[in-house]
Image (cartoon, rainbow, N blue to C red; front, top):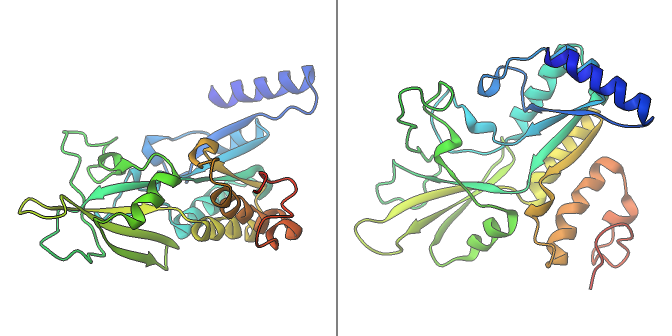
Length: 257
């Protein structure tokens, strides 16, 4: 079984190379996300840690079909679900997105300040793993920089913040003028939203935090890099780094100009 194989790999690797870690990437919740039903307890105790994939949360939407992102409340529910299996919090590492996704709003009738965007359904017979409302119909930004560049684009018409999920979003139209204009809504991450997730992990006393993925930052923009990476100080208590407003004392972080 998967659990037995994982335990064998862990035992073998730690015997050959003491101090090695074996992690298992698991969905944001143990509740059968994307039809993944595994022996969570067996996998957890047969490995060093779980990398909890706190992203693509709207891959299966069972309630009202509206655009969204990776909300803090959902991630809290997922982490609590793993703990309910008896998995220690210290075995959980919360992974978080460094990107965003754009959804077409089928309910757009001229109001560019739309808050609730109803995306098109996945129309294939089986949908996405049994569900017709899914982020499979959205288009990823690719990385944080791409998301943020659209914030000031001429066709971006509205900015919003959802205080329940602790996530920002914005609307843009294409083309800018014309009778066939379509409205899109982008749910994405910022240093603030990432900070809320890191704080959640800290408060729940999980074993660690991390990004998905490192390449989704623009490493040629040091301020962007610092603004995002410094949020992890809320978990690791690196006050010396976090309090450097200009990043000049960011020893251990990417060099500042």
